[in-house]
Length: 385
Image (cartoon, rainbow, N blue to C red):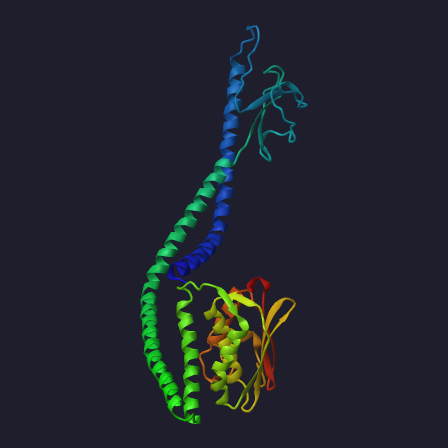
């Protein structure tokens, strides 16, 4: 994962956690603001009721008619002591017949008790409006959005600031590994080439065979490390691969490594369809599986490799007769080694897992301790052409 993606991912997680923590005080703030808004609305209703009362007080009874005050967003009306309307503009069924301010969902109304027989025989004045909390919601959402953005920006800043020393160290470590791998690859190639030249001029002997096998083991480790470093930075193009020819080549390549432990590789390779994937990725899957089968097999044993078609899918099977696997669920964890004495870095099967998940290749594992293991790769029909 790139540094920027890493920072963004954890900044987002941190922002989410902080936002959840802030929701509690923000919720109480929201309730408080709703109460404040409701109180303000009550004051507005009281103000309108006073305007109506003032208008009725100013009416002297000599005028031909009384012009009842009307408001754009407020409804009001006069009611008798039985809460029957004398004159009303209120288009609402009153539920609570008691002096004071009342809320019914978004309907707010104020009931004002009037002096007896003073205002057209009315006992009560009711002023009503629709209470909207849109302003409160808008303010709370604005605060929440501002806090989230601010926390995210600060998280990104601090994560990147704190990560700079580690990024520098990681870069130096990457450069060191790359240089080391280059330095290792050069003598490895020279040794391999010179062994081949020697074998052409002289009779092969077991010492040279062991040296050749050792260079192949080293090559497999080198290829794993090279893939691990580059796979996030390079684009691997897919291609049509003849599975039968590809697998035959890899089995031949590891035959010398198997001979170091007097292991016989039995291959039953039938003509299979062409698999459409990247050759380097397929090689990492096959090489690591064969290498592990050799590593964890008993001496003077066998390894069975089969390639066949079943249900229009390409099946690739590797069976060894060795120590087996005790914790199958852990073998794909990076740096995990079930048997430290067998060597390795514990990265091979982790690479295999990442590749087969990306390619939608199904893997079935059967293993019995001290009996052996079987790895079966099933390629999806969409990967074949």
